[in-house]
Length: 111
Image 1 (cartoon, one colour):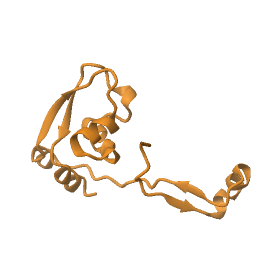
Image 2: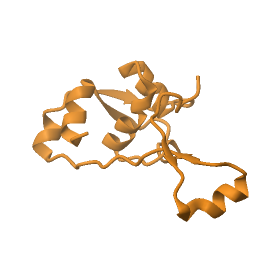
Image 3: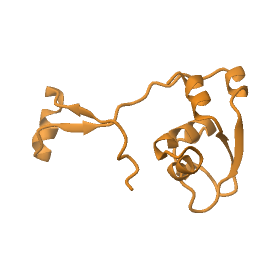
Image 4: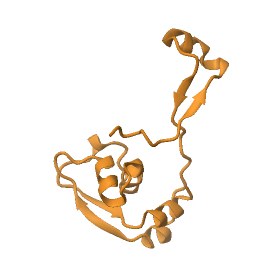
């Protein structure tokens, strides 16, 4: 199953990207929107219940999101909560905090 198959896409037919559409031979460009995140306060983070996961060889954020939330689209919650921009930044054996209640962490992020 592709990682982004459930992600909303934005259709971009702006004149600004006309050169790119011509270069690619397409009428529109599909892009993923960038979410605007709020950095929660220390108190908000303290109110989010987490469990510990030890990063091992083969782990991926999207796999953890599927395991803990049943939806791989929320991989970015785990990455953001632990301060890792990509999986390449996580070393084997590192301890990750996985927010248990997805709704609580999304409210803290104001998403």
